Every structure is written in structure tokens, then in C-alpha cells.
Length: 112
Image (cartoon, rainbow, N blue to C red; front, side, top):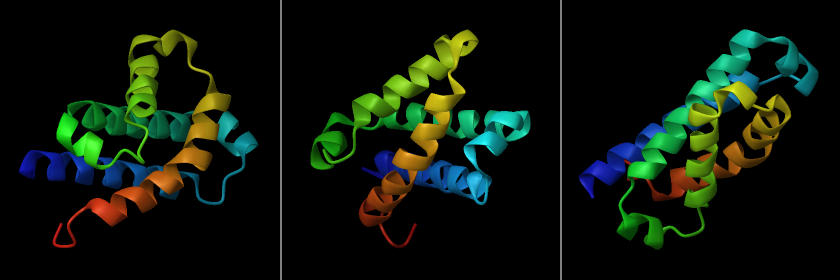
């Protein structure tokens, strides 16, 4: 479980960064800012890679998290980088990342 704890923490740190990067921005701001786009995409990749490595036991224990969607997003961002839809990245970041932060905060041991 120790390895899973570290991976979950990696996911939480990356998700919090996304929230921070987008704070005060509109979708239009995001669409116009390549630096923020790159930063958000990178952290989504980190979240997806960490999620991919989480054990099946931990995934089953926390089935309220959509592990398949998270790893699928990572796959698209990494392997289909030439066709990234920024509207989907934005939607993912603003609609799905804050609930993910909340879910991860509930399951990560407080001493981490």
C-alpha cells in the first residue's frame, strides 16, 4: 500500500497544481495562454500515469474515482498529442479535477 499512497499523493499534488494554475482564468484566457495549457496538460499526464500504476486493490477500494477515464485522458494526451482538444482539457480541468482533489483528500493518510 505504501507505493499506492505515494502515487495517490502524486495525483493530489498534480491536481492541486491544476486548480492553482487555472485560478481566476476564463476558458478564453486558457485558450490564449500556451504556458498554462502546457502546464495543465503536463499535470493531467502526471495524474493519469500515477493512476495507471495504482494497484487493482486500491482502485477497487476507491471505485468512486473513474480510474479508466483518468488513464484514458493520459493516453490521449501522450499518444495523440497532435490532436489535443483544448476545450476538452479545459472541461476536464474545471469540472473533474476539483472533485478529484476532494476524493483524494479523503483517502490519503493525513500524515502525508
